[in-house]
Image 1 (tube, rainbow, N blue to C red):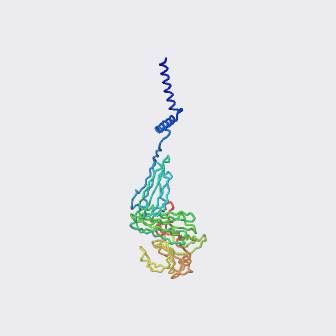
Image 2: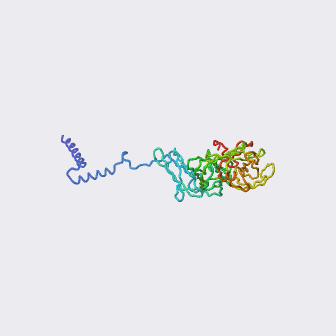
Image 3: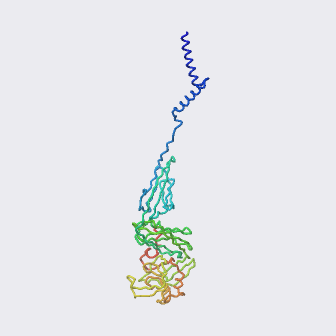
Length: 408
């Protein structure tokens, strides 16, 4: 029994010692040791899953692409392409070296960005773009490049003078000094701003001529500005255009209708009609049927039969007063002083032109003098009931009104 007690007592003593070490009983030294043991235990403890030591950044599934590549030179002004895959573009900034930003729009699906204006030639650009995936993780890309310097320029000349006033049939005809390769881009580079919302469209007659008109005759008083933005448009390989603005105004309405068979011309100005006796083309040289436009007011013009291919009859060489050109091929409405007075309103004797009574050198008070003074470039001339079988070529003068709007 005694031995058993000793064992138990020894166990209790061991237990008491253990408890003393754990709980810090009477002596001060025991407390210090306990604190030291706890501190060592805390420092050596391993972190748990509930308390991570760091956060791993998310990798975006989106990717941004920029063409041209960084450092590219001699880049075409229309070559910039910015897109995103695996996400949507959120921010795109394109700036030139002065800090001027190029305006543009991100597509509805966020897959691409398109500049609203062409880039300038001979200019350095900086590009930065951002895209985000479905989780909001962001991807970025940057680029820098410079556009080419044109090797040559193409002149775009038209028939409009700044701040001039034209008739309601005015067609703006643009002629290029070189054959146009990129017709769609060139047509988009010429726009019409109107104060009443009139829509204007262009029509190519050949590789160098582009004419513009609205669907119907202009409304009187319309204010128009033609914007040429061709500086960064490649007209022909390596050849670019220029930028300029040309304002003009549409004046009062005047539409004249020539009835060849009746030898009469009805002039309707702002709704008020008047009638004038005329002499049109003879049966041998009939006047074109169709809608024409006064191209120019040329005053006295020398007209010679020798300059007209296939002309028959008595030769002539005349100084013709009050001449207004209607076609490139030589159709005019002009004064006539060499025919008898009884000819007008009774007979057609001209070589294809429309003649009104006048005096040599032109008289202000004559039928043609009054008509000339009251006319504008761009006024409409409609010819009907002529014996001419061929159809007037819409490219002959400003005769594009003979093209249906659906084909314009």
